[in-house]
Amino acid sequence: MAHVLGRPVSWLYAHAELYPALDQIDAFHELLRQLLAGVPPEYLTGRAAFHSIELLVTPAVLVPRPETETLVDLALERLAGRQRPRIADVGTGSGAIALALAHARPDALIVATELSSSALRVAARNVQEQRQEARVLLVQTDLLEGVDGRFDLVAANLPYVSDGDLEGVSAAVSRYEPWLALAGGADGLDLMRRLLRQLPRQVRPGGWALLEIGAGQGQAASEAARLAVPSAELRVLPDAWERDRVLTLRFAG
Ligand SMILES: C[S@@+](CC[C@H](N)C(=O)[O-])C[C@H]1O[C@@H](n2cnc3c(N)ncnc32)[C@H](O)[C@@H]1O
Image (cartoon, rainbow, N blue to C red; front, side):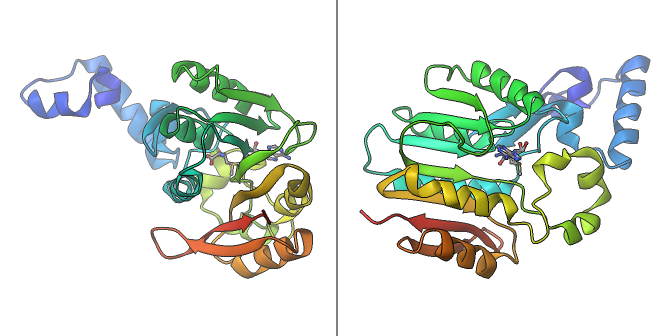
């Protein structure tokens, strides 16, 4: 209702005695109908809260998830003490990770990559809205292909839903969110394996890679990382719900 009226939710509480106009009630009912059909509320309002920022979202991008805030917090901890860190966000979608990091670290330089042109258009609007054009560079490419230089930290929330699980994810997720943002191949780790192979030439000595994984993927993701980067120190860290969520690699210094 706050969205229909173009007011903050607090305004509704302060004006409980007011009746909406008939066309506003119709618009409200239409939103309810779509919600009940499973459309994520963020696609209806076009806005999503993530970490310390708010983002524009459309069905071209995944709605940023609270689990991914864990990855942002872990990245910030690891960047503490590094001046002007160079960061990559691979598969940026709405720009969520890149922009949350840019907000928290005004001295960082961030390259955010994305394969989908329609997702990149949403990310570009968010970069503009947050006035981060000077520090967040968007690049359309496959993972880190063609991206120059090395990074202090590479963050990625790539698609990691396995072919088998894709059928099981809720109808709302598979029907309304972009397939390119979800599908990770037979065991869900296809894209991560490819990115892991690119990492040794893209991460500075002593630098980090933080990769979001699915709750049951800790062991398989660690094995893939051990094969690709045998010298890196690996850890699997949980999200706020105590599920495996982030694989961290510390590169030898
Ligand atoms: C799970 S979504 C995450 C989006 C965003 N980082 C977030 O955390 O909300 C994965 C994103 O990776 C993008 N993607 C898929 N394959 C890619 C590839 N090969 N190279 C770059 N981006 C890719 C998808 O289009 C999607 O936007």
